[in-house]
Length: 67
Image 1 (cartoon, rainbow, N blue to C red):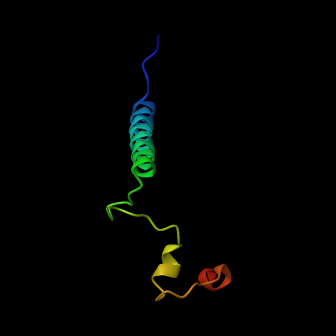
Image 2: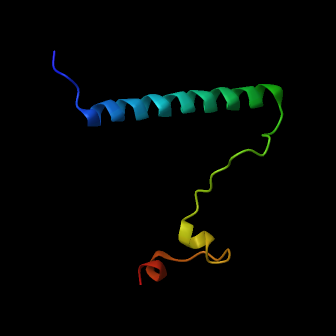
């Protein structure tokens, strides 16, 4: 068999880490639903665009951002 490239080794390692994190998040969510308690206020992620967050809470349209 042939040797894997360095890129492929790194890619596989990243995918394994992401899978472990997804499993943990799924287990945590299931436990929260079963117990009926809310999250502990840990790390949260915002899906808003970074430009919209830095504009003092105002939402910028894409046309304005591109100029």
